[in-house]
Image 1 (cartoon, one colour):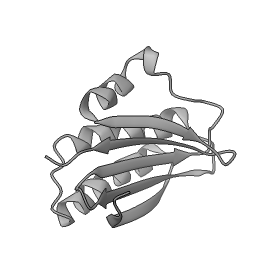
Image 2 (tube, rainbow, N blue to C red):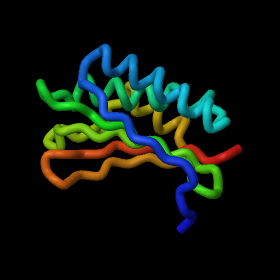
Image 3 (cartoon, one colour):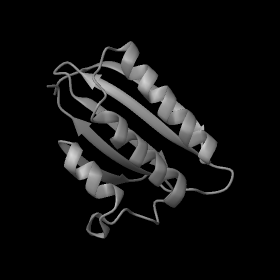
Image 4 (spheres, rainbow, N blue to C red):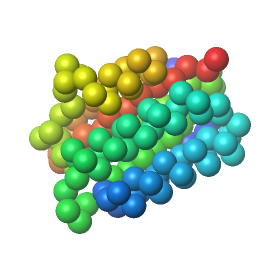
Amino acid sequence: MIPQLLSCVFQLSATPRGARLGRLLAVEQLRSWSVRFDKAEPVIAELIANAVTHGRVPGRDFRLTLSVDGAGTLRIELTDTRADRLPDPQAGGGLALVAALADRWAVEVGPAPWKTVWAELDAG
């Protein structure tokens, strides 16, 4: 396992304003790390949009975690409080974009009531 070299976590309101702020903070964080974000930005935007649209519970936030490991792999994690609503990769839409741009992505459930949708983009 390659250790993480860089990591940050943002807790944001599950609202359109929180989504916008999350996108802006993520891009600025990647810029400060000198990480190319041409493929990362649309993946981040889609995962945030899904968390706000499909994972929203009034009064509960979502969490955005960004990390880069020693091999330069960027990991994007979006955690929301709707483990009862899992993404359907067969539905197409935004997840098709995530699947096309990310080198790997998946969903992890738990502990209740959380779920995390993550995507990884390899360096290069």
